[in-house]
Image 1 (tube, rainbow, N blue to C red):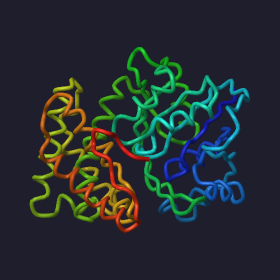
Image 2: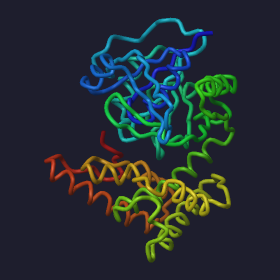
Image 3: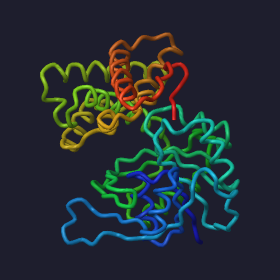
Length: 338
């Protein structure tokens, strides 16, 4: 049966999933914010290469393209194999206004798949969509956006899929169908019955690596090598682990080793937060460390190291905003700006 995949956000991950799925014969539609990127994708198509691929020819596909704002209403075209919506925008983009724009754009039977870092976005989307139509996904696939129409697949990984509402959420068959669709496109995909554990483990690793690389302005691999930094990394992770314990979220006992493994495996990479700081863009600090701080506030718990790093990254954002003349950031209780 013919399935359809709408990908909202044509950044690195959006182009990776869109390119591979379209090349596998899936009907793919890219939804973008910027008209300029939309025009280029329509005119040039999407090119997906493989880092270190040698003579391997890049994929070139021509998916359908729509704008998030200003498009016609929902596409009512039949998709008997399921209509999947992969949300590959940054977590900071998932606002009530964004959710409402999505609701107007999508058919009622579409299943949303959230690939964001951090926490809090599922709750925003649940205000506009039934929770049974929301899936969470955690991926270790690596991708790099080169231009508005070109991306590189920088590392193969695994994508885990699970219901946002837990056992009472999307049917297991729905999750398995999505995993099969991704595997058809050459991805490794697994259904997880403990997706919240996966989400939190990635959250805690990001809460260690992202802010420290952004503040110190070093690639991932340098963090464990700098004097005093491993101890700071352990303290950050320890605060997150204790918070997860209080919330009843199980974690792997070897999470510290996983953090070090990620630093080694991505040694030359600049984290997305570092890239945002260097470019003067808003970061996802509010979704990552800020998400931890909001949960801690709810439990009346202090996370002093996370608080300090949150404040420092916000200060770096303010520095970038002053350079570009943008308004100041809202406090953490108010959530993130788009």
